[in-house]
Structures are given as structure tokens and as C-alpha cells.
Image (tube, rainbow, N blue to C red; front, side, top):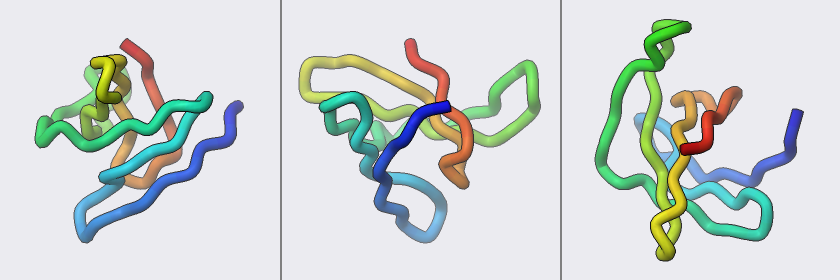
Length: 62
């Protein structure tokens, strides 16, 4: 379990604060294969990436 801070648009998260980094929605959406849940790709300015569910309840780091 981890704490994040997120801002949402009408479809899902577009900005996430996590572990001292700010991640922005890259415009890339998908589906987490194992769970079938819709996700968004987020990235920092240094190109660190993660995937987050549209409700912000689960994150997978790249």
C-alpha cells in the first residue's frame, strides 16, 4: 500500500505525485492484462513511467 496524490480529468488521473516525483498522463491508455482493468500511462520529465487505474486505486511501475 502507498499514498499518492492525484488530479483527475473527466476520464481518469492526469497528474500523480508519488515518491517525490510528478507523473503526467502521456496520452496512452490501455488495459492491465492480468486484471482486465482500464489504465493510463503516466511519466515524469525524466521518463520514469507507471500505469494507474482510472480510479487511481492501483499502480504498476515500469
